[in-house]
Image 1 (cartoon, helix red, strand yellow):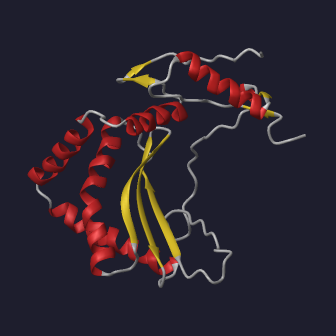
Image 2 (cartoon, helix red, strand yellow):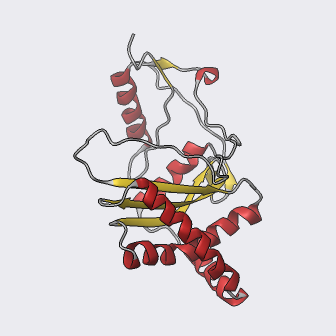
Image 3 (spheres, rainbow, N blue to C red):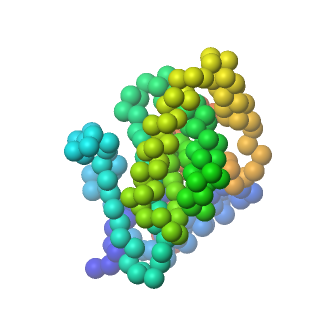
Length: 219
């Protein structure tokens, strides 16, 4: 028995490639892996669950110890997920991420100089958006970095409350402009299409398209 006795795979071939060439690539891959079909009932799936909060009511903590004792780097990723899946609330998360991105970097990277990698942004999974804060440092441990992230979030609440409607509309307009830009690079278009496949949406220009399954016949 091997890892590849049974498998489920999806392939995206995009670019200046003829259909028969694309099918030939898939056929070569299938012959190399030599697996049999993994039925849908046996395939793994990603589900979203509501998990209880920690005793401090700030979420759940996952810690991973660095196996290399000589590695002084520490990294944290604080993920704030919005359970409300309505379009209005999910788009509000996008706007919030746009507002918080530069201040978060300026505070933790430029002012406090906590790490050489400092970023924030939106993560989309199963139609649920999360605001993600990431910090990596070679002198501060994960606990310290996490405390600083939450301190920023708490302090930035005052900034949000003090923003005018006009300021927020400016961020909304900028976000709309970014999302309205046409894709000019094949790599970006491929990433977008692959994300659609992974999420099982199979949409083109916002319209649902059918999923095509086929098996390359043995030669």
